[in-house]
Amino acid sequence: EDKVVQSPLSLVVHEGDTVTLNCSYEVTNFRSLLWYKQEKKAPTFLFMLTSSGIEKKSGRLSSILDKKELFSILNITATQTGDSAVYLCAVVTYSGGGADGLTFGKGTHLIIQP
Amino acid sequence: GAVVSQHPSWVICKSGTSVKIECRSLDFQATTMFWYRQFPKQSLMLMATSNEGSKATYEQGVEKDKFLINHASLTLSTLTVTSAHPEDSSFYICSGERTVGEQYFGPGTRLTVT
Image 1 (cartoon, rainbow over the protein chains, first blue to last red):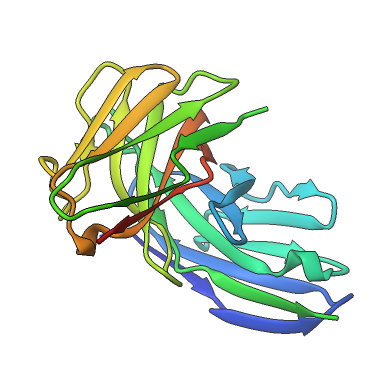
Image 2: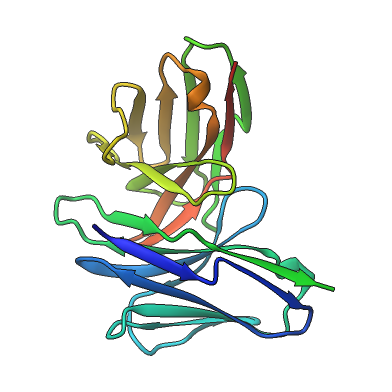
């Protein structure tokens, strides 16, 4: 059974701090790893990672994948209250039958205090 | 770019009736669309993968006769909850796959069955 584990489950920090969110996985036929930010409604796409060691960056957010150790991290620097959200990690697997498999972690609930 | 819409945003229906939820990719063609369910304070659960022009692939435990999925075009997929019951009340989210592994989510539809 494919498994995606995120840690920590919940994190409270002060504005301006840097946070690192973790996502480890055990899946068969890995295709890609996705990060999403979910506030009150549906998740919004942040990054898709397919290759090890290549950092993806968008403003204060960055992410990297380690396919050997089977994990990814999402970094947020100089956090702002607007970064408060649940951050979801999902792994896409290739099923070979025409449909990709997709497994989500339980998410990390990040709270940024002013 | 990569916008996905859902209609309706919120629906309340009586037990025993059927409800149809539409998912549209507005500015890209989505060969594959996904349907998820999310309970309060829980992560997304994939219900089914829908490929345009073919039958949907349902995840284990999801009743295909209860949750009918149609993906008639590259920009539209529909989910019909048949003979809805209060336990079907949930937040239903769809996503469209723009490129392999890169999904964009709709805003979600809140279903309340009374």
